[in-house]
Image (tube, rainbow over all chains, first blue to last red; front, top):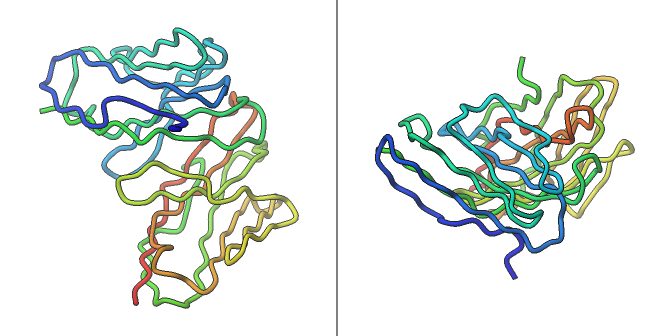
Length: 114
Length: 111
């Protein structure tokens, strides 16, 4: 029944490693997002995909690479992890990027880089 | 200036109190407005959309003033279960439709 699911829920890894976070939505939405919530609890958009096409790419280091194999999935790959990457990463989806529509969030992936 | 700014928190109120949150946004082209709620260590969830004429959902009332670029949320008869962080959210369609979040205001309702 989970609408937006992301894995893993917790991720602890060493600096310099490469890791991926997966996200899937079963709502039939055509737009998916990645948000980062830092230690100050501020939620900031990183990427947005509409029908597998990148439409928003905020100022994010190019170590972060999103991949959307189909409109139900948006994965986030992070290369050469740094201490400052530690945060909670939320995946979200909505029906259309330009409509007044609710976004549904996954439960978050708490990334800790040590 | 942040795109969406909210009252600094935390708000500590007794049960039964009425509490109001304020929010301002900088992009006059913004078209959609929301209040989301985020519980500790959980994902944000939509509390209510905010419409130009103002809208109410039970104990919650949201208001929008486009001229002042101001949004508010009023919670009446606070319950312990209202304790959470309340996020003001704006959707600017001229920015690809992304949701822009305020930093959130923490509410703690005490017995």
